[in-house]
Length: 356
Image (tube, rainbow, N blue to C red; front, top):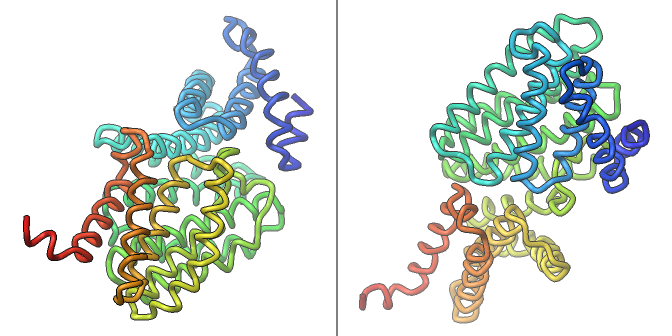
């Protein structure tokens, strides 16, 4: 377990998986024992949380659920054990994000996650009163807010998400400026990137294109700053450094700067095609690549050559999204993008639509 902790601290996630799994296997019988100690159960929950970051979303959700049950048994929900409370809030946030990834976002689960988010806020407030953990809880509190905004995006609540994001950014800048711990700073930067993405996406949907451009440019400027604790995604789902380019290109096209948009997209499309050739196929990759192709189609000129390239790009985008599982196809982002592509295709083929 010490080896696993060392590997996680160094950011060597691949090396950490084996020791972490071994630690989970060793501790499980003691945790399940009637006389299992608090210390062992707490350590077991921490290991499960670490391990969940290396798992596919479905498995990660189940792993988080197991950790939450252990922590609840230690008194996390009634604040009887603040260490368990802080860990519960952290893992509840992880589970909410993983649940979003696999499409578990129907209304009942949305309400359940909102309850978890509110409970987590209360937990952070309680933990903040404990000396020495205020900075850590400020950082994790931002992750809870991000989960709330991501839920809003999934349900098309763009105005609310944009307002929340723009309000959060100055607060996050103030927080980051005061952080001295490199891991906490890296984590806070990760959540700032998420916030900028949410602001840009919501602004695009609201047709606030200048604001979307500002957020996308800020997002691109942050991708040079990384750190150990910023790896909150799966091993086959690395953070997408080119996603800001896609959002920026869409904003530029909407403001009449199509040539600039195509130039902005060029390295992103090259990256996505290279990743596809190497086997990338997870949900977020397909959604991002498809949206980049959609943005390319919008930016092409209206001459015969541009129209042909637009049709080709839209066809490739559809093929990417059709490769998703049925569950992933029902995600808000997938359905929204498919509707945009259908509208763009209709605009390119008005005669065919008239004949129908």
